[in-house]
Amino acid sequence: MDGATYNVKIWKISVYRGKRKITHTVRWELDGNEWRAPFATHPLADAFRSELVGATRRGEAFSLTTGRPVSHQSGASTVNWYDFAVQFADAQWHRTGGNNRKNTSKALMATTIALLRTPPTAFRPVDVRTALREFAFNTRRREDAPPEVATILKWVERNTLTMAAWEDPAKADEVLRAVGSKLDGTRAAANSVKRNRRILNVAMEYAVKQRILRANPLPKGRGAVPKTSSAVDKRSLLNPEQAAGLLGWVRNRPRGGKRLHAFFATMYYAGPRPEEAVAMDAADVRLPAEDAEDQWCELLFHTAQPEVGRNWTDDGEIHEERGLKGRASDDTRIVPGHPSLTRILREHIKAENLKPGDLLFQGEKGGMLAGSVIRRAHRAGRKEVLTPHEFDSPLGRRVYDWRNTRLTMWLNYGIPPAQVAEWAGNSVPVLLATYARCVSGQLPDLKRRMEAGEDCP
Image (cartoon, rainbow, N blue to C red):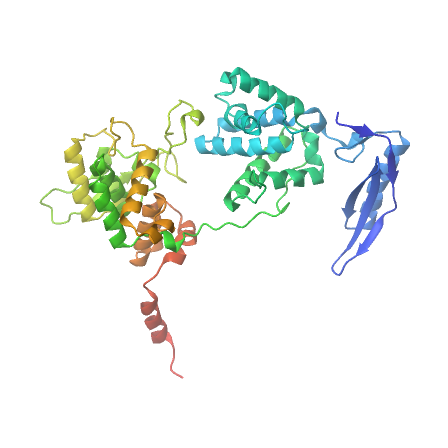
């Protein structure tokens, strides 16, 4: 059990009359530290105060962690946070993919650091964080932890608070602030804060399900969660001249340039996600006959191979095979390929002598094209083709911006959003929320439509 005391003083109910509502607050002291519990009505506050008074008359101890009588506590005081976090990580491992496993481990690592009774003095903080992130909350690697890591984890287990810490609102808020901050104390990126809060919320619901906590201590609205936007930054989009320059530079790259040229051309003309493009088979490209009048090709997407790292996959491979994002595991989609892409892919397949069953885009040794190779070529191309100002700007900074450019171009061409969403593998609401701000070039036509529709006064 956490620390408890019999030194209790209970005060009268205080009433605060605000402009919109009246708050009735029960106040009491434990070893000189004041605790408060606000209620909307006097009967509710009086009933709670009566419970506190009854506990003191029965000679019951009060928890210094929750401020409540010991009889009010759930089973949280008997469960160590570290043990629970390991159990939760294992429960999530088999139902989530590699990237989710990695994010869960990071969130649990930051939370565990915040729930230590004392800061580590016998170990470097970076070693403690690494031990937690890479081993403690990694189901596949935990048993293989080196002796020095195992020593750190045993110390952490002995020095973390119990789950009763979550029943203390002040402590819960303190943990949320820590999880939402970087190592230097500054605010973390909004997306990171929101992701960590979401993971902890799932953990708390799991604790309730396991009857460790009586209620989720992180209800919606608890603490300030920064707002995030899914909208694409218009500054990141490439224009046709910039895209042509980058494709030309990649093609002339001495090492693997032609293979990478075909990959980036596919990203530019068909707009797949990078993990969908690297998973393509040579048979997924449906080329027209060379003498056909219509030289448009078709690309079939049915698999994704995101790069998550060997430590987070079940088989120890860098990539993890899965279905298309947001779709059934066996779903597919077909995207038309511009005649320029038809020519590029036809030459690529011939030059590489690819057969059905072969990966369309391969690395130097014939395996899957590595994300590090793609990113390195992309960065080098930006540095050589773009001006210094453009290179330092968001313009095409991420490989994903090739996809964003194509989807925006389709919308600008006036292609119906439902069709663009089908080709992109998005829902229409997600497509519009992400790309609507980047649609341009249609204002003159829209003005003419509005003028034609106005009645003359």
